[in-house]
Length: 524
Image (tube, rainbow, N blue to C red; front, side, top):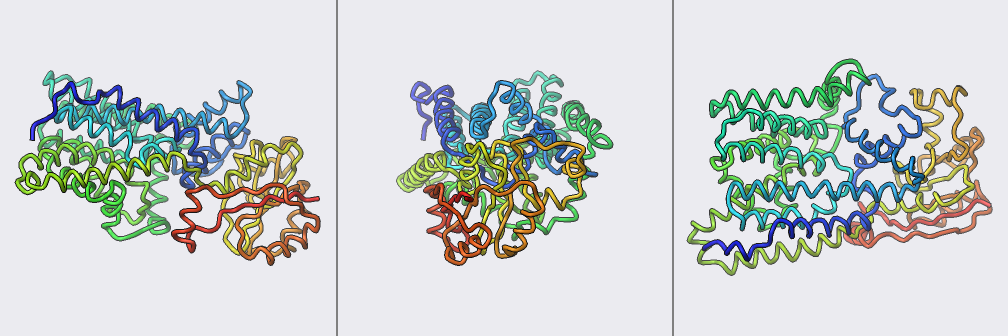
């Protein structure tokens, strides 16, 4: 099967415009956050720094998350507030737009790598996949280091492949490749495995100078970023890496775990079967064509498969590499396969199914408001000028950590404000610092706390509740009776309906995904 004429291929510029268009839709319409980490370990920390709270910096050990990434968000928020922009929704729209633009580098380097390793036809296919596969636009505008680390490591591989093909035997491109691996590393420590795989391939090929250049570039860049950050805020260079290793060694089984094949199933599911199986087969055939990419990706996959903590988002950095090598290897395999040459209709049907499903899901995800029941009520309350406190009522379910950033003012959950002994609140509790005039206290109520206990918290605090946020509609008679003990004069102020995505999840699995209707009452 011959390759199509180059003049009929979609150019890279068009693919980038397609990628940008769907990411802009996601940036404006896909509000909320996907996981706890992309909000509470990025947005909350950055805004806390801006509000004068030394979150993370007051702890004896460094955080287990990227300080550089949070510093970038701190800079964005600082700039916006200096311009008079304080709205949490506007801030997050700007953040999503910045991520949308940055994520185009994934499409660019994915295309260029594929073009270098094979041809423009395969590059077009990879470019479109990176632009439009269902999770790419949605995840690209989230605050996920698993996505943010992808452009630098792809750029590093591109520099190495380009230099090897041009055969000029210069060491400087390999130095910059090492520096780019380091940039990916300071966003997401696990990506060091990609660089390690590339370095081992260079050693196996007896390319000593190139291997040393990659290592030197990595060490210099990693020290200038992560090393300097740790010197300034903590005890010694790379203290964060030591703390990360110690914590994960001690708590390896405390999070989502699963069998060794869990990530293999994740890859097959995320990339949509049967095409996902095609891509895996194609990937296995590229060890000689692109050894640095192949072994870097394989080491990354094996290491994550062996480690107990197996959250699906951990494997996201590998998926672009599987698309790149998978398409190249699979297309090469099909050209030499009698089986597939005689079953072109089946092959075409598989790809049609892949693209139809992905395009529908891509648009749907780009319009998805995730965690709406946790975000939208706080956005609504952020418009209330006179508010000292709010009660978050969860019925008979566990309390979910509220994203108080969306209140648009300094705020805290009462338990942390009173009980925590760390430096974040200690100075305020001792009266050494004054809380802002618009400070808001959040209280929680669920099956684990009686109305009497909540009343004691309210009595002990100068910040009295003005609103009650009731999450869900189950057992409402019992729940409202409990609230009436505390607030006999509640008046319904606003109702927030769940997003289409949340309603669909509840319909498919009501045991896991609870009713997301929210009612906001004013305390009279």
